[in-house]
Image 1: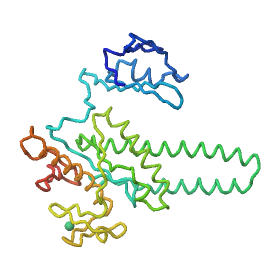
Image 2: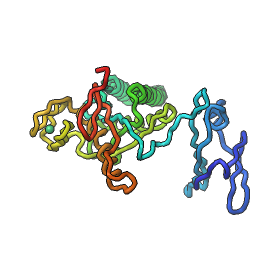
Image 3: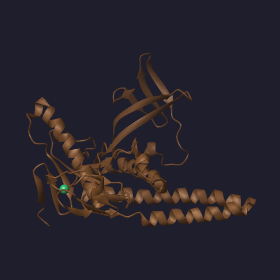
Image 4: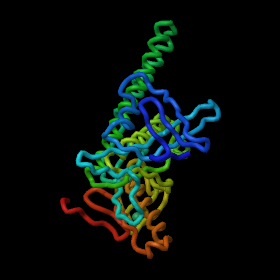
Length: 311
Ligand SMILES: [Zn+2]
């Protein structure tokens, strides 16, 4: 159930909600450590309340209240965090969660993930050693190691997420586009299983971090991202276009790094989706979809490639 400003009133330890049976006051269960997220985002002057949803969990018979806020800039202007209106021009940053690299942006920036893979292997080695010892001490050490590994992984993914958001801000992008991860397990080989965890967290963290810097996040259905030629006017799709880290189009001969090709395609996929939506909307009068995909040294849209002034 959705609550807006009028139907929900916040107090320090409780909330008052209007219901069909009149006002109901509910006490929060908050973390012990201050500042709680509630203090930081709901009670703070720096954020303004947007909407919230009340959710009921049948299994535990508990209610959860999800609150959405947005950051207010110092001059009083609020940073718009809602996805921008259909009629507005958008510049998008495509992100491919790669086969060879952890993440690649359509601007050509790579997050290789080598360090991540290295440490995952190191943790695994240590784990096997401790399991073989089998003592109580080794068991306790194993638990501590697991805790340290989880903390390290989270920290690493947080850093990459922040850098992706900064990449979008630095390149004046309004939206970051990811591929939908629903079928990711089927699309990755078994060897990359720990990347599935990393990809999911990465999208989550970016979705959490981007709005407070004025950037929206969208997902598109996967569409042969790695097999499709991202060259303007081509789009030829074939599995033999790709050979490991190298992409070479069998039709037009376009050669490019395979993950970078994927990142461009994620952005282009969103552009085509919006073009289609705008054309089928009677309000837009069939106008061209105002979407640019930010690529290395320029912009791509329905009319082709346009270099930016500084390149
Ligand atoms: Zn091609």
